[in-house]
Amino acid sequence: MSKNAFAGGLLFICGLAIGLSITALAAQQREGAGREGGGRARGPRPPTMEEVPQEILNLRQLVPTNSTIMMDVQFHWTNLWFAGKKRNWPLAQYYFNEARNHIQQLVRKNPTIRNAQDGTTVELQGIFDGIDTSSLQMVKDAIEKKDGQVFEKNYKTMIESCYACHKSVGRPYIRPQIPTSQVQAIVNMDPNATWPQ
Ligand code: HEC
Image (cartoon, rainbow, N blue to C red):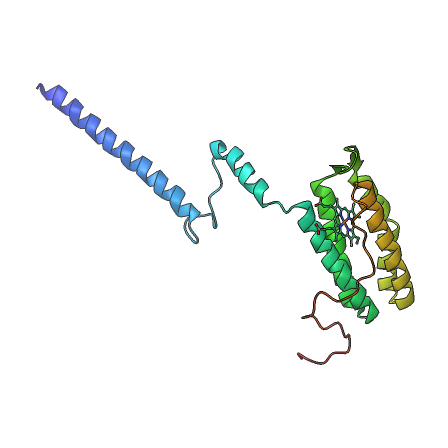
């Protein structure tokens, strides 16, 4: 082997070693960044471009179903009735906001939806906008004015709006009513409660 060939071979091996260690270092850094407290980013590392489509499919699995979102709506809307009955206005405002946010979440998820009976396309956004400026707004006003009688009247009007949307989406069998029993037993609805302090 000539001297030159030997030097060339050595250079090649050095290059290979440097190349390999850079690759290993980069992999280590990527991994480190993914670990809690390691590297710049906290939490899981962002997906690479190749991983994005799979990542989107994974995330879609996590989006709550319409039924789950509506279960939240009915939960908060039920609690709202009992908070209003007790004239606990800050709590009523809280439940109102939660219920409204969840109806909004349904609409954001499906600006349009298929009517379950006739298959036509229903504009959920339009229905929500109509309710938001009428019956929902009326309940909000009554809470803000702390007017118990108006609250009860407007709450019923909103129940009619809930049902109007259910009919529009082809689910007339989901007929809401004034709730018959409180679902959130752990929250004291009494505005004058003194315990826990
Ligand atoms: C903008 C339209 C819209 C409004 C407004 C609306 N809902 Fe719904 N609701 C739906 C749809 C759509 C479904 C069916 C979800 C599904 O396909 O699983 C539903 C389903 C439900 C269910 C059944 C959930 C289950 O799967 O067990 C309840 C309870 C319910 N809604 C309560 C209410 C109440 C209470 C209100 C008013 C405060 C309300 N909804 C307002 C669209 C609406």
